[in-house]
Every structure is written in structure tokens, then in C-alpha cells.
Image 1 (cartoon, rainbow, N blue to C red):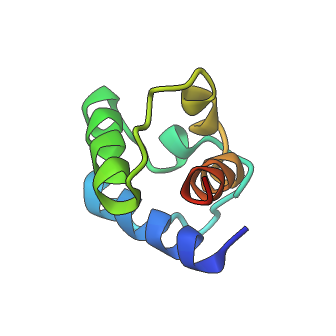
Image 2: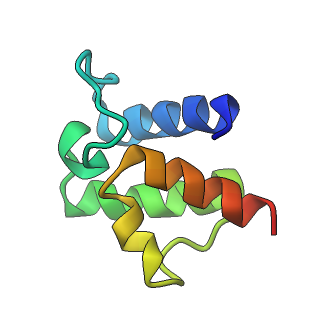
Image 3: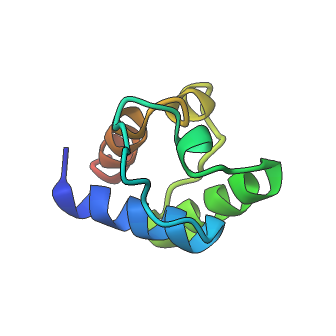
Length: 83
């Protein structure tokens, strides 16, 4: 997993939610829960993903599952960027 992608994702998540990276952050934990994202923040985050990484988030079934784990989200971004 790319450290650059991880850093950018944390920055974007903090910007969208107004929440700092949790001190007890678990990379295998839910992105939605750890950043306290409501449905509006989740939608905004998908738009920001498209703008930042050129990823049409939500176009594949695996996209929503990626929000269950930061590790999976970063892996999805890396896969989509490399295609």
C-alpha cells in the first residue's frame, strides 16, 4: 500500500468530516465509524475521491465494501490508479 495514498486519504477524510485522524485509528476498522461519517459526508467523500484521484467511486460493487476498512479503501485507490 502506498504511504502517499494513505496520507492523502487521511487528509481528505479529515477535510470532509472535520475530524482529525483518531488517535486509536485501526487501519482494518470502518472508515465511516472511525471518522464519524454520516451519509452526507460519505457522499461528499466519494466526490472528493473522484476529484483527487480520478476514481469514479460507486461504479463497482466493491466500492461500498471498501469503506469497511481503511486498508481496503487504500488498496482500491491503488488498484484503480494503476489501471
